[in-house]
Image 1 (tube, rainbow, N blue to C red):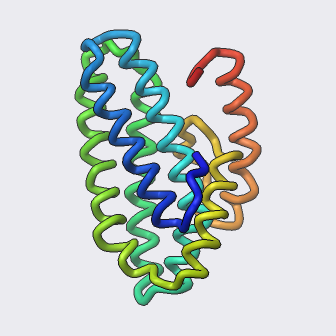
Image 2 (cartoon, rainbow, N blue to C red):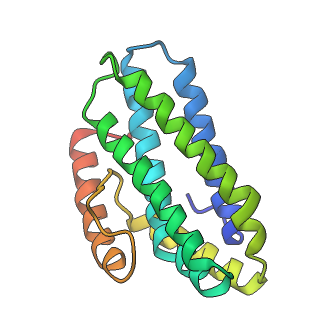
Length: 182
């Protein structure tokens, strides 16, 4: 978290971190506790990343890009599918028969979303000031963002900006007490 640079550099670095977590997941023995811990780490990173994008990136997309509303809405739909998969995975142990199947679906969704952002959306965000300012906002949002999926939580302003820090605080307390993500 907090790599510096503009929003594209920040989010691209986050994408590589998620890919690395998926690779570590692949290396862990099937059904192992290590896989469950890695899925917790993936969940934490993906939720924080999504919340930050929803709070700031997609607002900029709506404001600065032609067809911005449609682009932002499509990205939010991607996030909703990922968040529901994360919620489903959170309720399963690593030795559950559906665990690996759900991880494959999650990776497919995340990979498609990352490819779309990096190869299409990011190329359209060109103004240097906007990019730098968004990078700072994304880094700040991730510090207070939830660490657990909340599919029913709002994903658009102003409600998401009001509720996310409170949900994030509750999630971080739960993580601390349970040792999750340590």
